[in-house]
Image 1 (cartoon, helix red, strand yellow):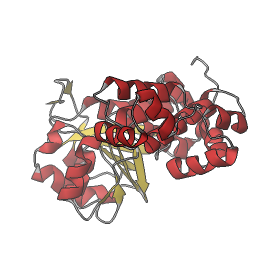
Image 2 (cartoon, helix red, strand yellow):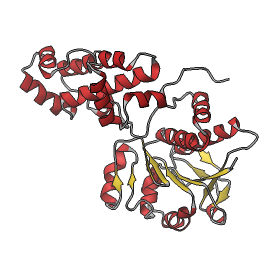
Image 3 (spheres, helix red, strand yellow):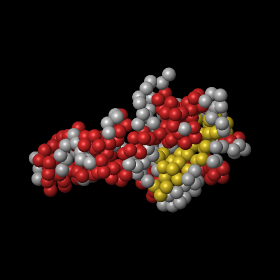
Image 4 (cartoon, rainbow, N blue to C red):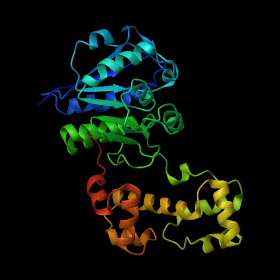
Length: 325
C-alpha cells in the first residue's frame, strides 16, 4: 500500500482544531493499517520554531518549511485561524512556489485565504468559514466562492468550511484513499458520523435562519421543526401565528431572513435526511413522515438541495451505530 505523506503548514495564530482534527483522522486511519501505515503526517512552520495557536496552545513543528521544500508531498494541508488575517509575505510566497508540487492541496477554514493570496484558487470553486466567504469573494474575485457547502472539491484542490468541517473533509479523503470501511472506523472512534456530504449546508435551517424576534413567529419556527409532516402552508402557519397570510409571510421573512416556504423546505430535507441516516424506514414512509406525500416529491427536493436522490443518500450515509473496539 502506498504511504501518503501529509504536510500540515503551521503559523502563529493558527486554529488548533483546524490542525488536530484532520491530523487525528489521518493518524487514526494509519492505526487501522499498522502494517502499512498509509499516512505519515508532518507539521512544518517557516522557521520550525514552536508557535502559539489562536487559543494559546503551543505547537512544536516537526521541521521548517525550508526543509519541507526539499521533499515531495502527497497532501499539503493549510489550516486557518486568526493568523490568516495578517499578511505574511514569506508564508504566502512559500505556498505559491512549493504548494503546487503536492498531489493534493487542502485547506481548512480560512486556510483558503492563504491559498487565494498565493494564487492557488484562481479559476477554482472554493469555500471557507461562513463568516469569511464574503471577504474571500471580495478580495479574490477570480475565485468562485460557494458559501454553502461544508467542503468543496475542484480537481486536486479541496477547501472546507470552518473548524470541524476539516474533519468531514479529512474523512472524505480517507474514504477516497482507503475505502469506506476505514473511514467509518475512524469516524466511530472519533465519535463523529461519516454522514455529511460535501454539499450539505454549513448551517441547519434553524441556525441559518435568524430566530424571529416576536414570540408568535418563534413559536411557528419551533412548531415547523417539530411537525415537518404537518400542514405547513402559509395559510396554516399564519393561522397559528394569528396573522393574515400576507402579513405573516412578510413578517416571517423580515424577522428570519428567509421565506416561510424556503424554511419549511429546508426543515423537511433535514428531517428526511436524519430518518434515512438513522432508521430503516422505507423511502415512501420517510416521504410521508416529512410532509412530501410521495417519494417523487422527496426525490426532487433531495436532488435540488443535496445533489443526490434519497436512495443514493441512504446508500452512502446510512450505517448502524456500533461502539468502537
